[in-house]
Image (cartoon, rainbow, N blue to C red; front, side):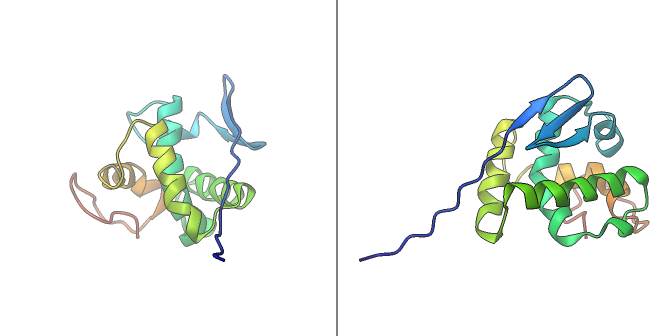
Length: 137
């Protein structure tokens, strides 16, 4: 007899005029253009945030972010990560689903997304130029 481990995620995402709500956790739309300049605050931009949200949740501390928006994004990411039950086995499928919903391809889109929010999240002072790899550290 074989044994199988199955991970199921439940995400309930709702959009309101001022926010996105994931399983009861609200993420303000006004924060998206601050994180991703030039991308707006539509649902596709929110899914782009969701792609890298596991990184924020598991590898960043709120106090590390140099801006209020960065602190907000990391704090919300941690709450969403825990709320939907992400673990090592479910992170990649979660990112792939978010990428599909945001009409992006993984891993190709990761550098572009990381480049956009680098200054809000890292605060390392590094100048990030287009095409730079591994921009969140």
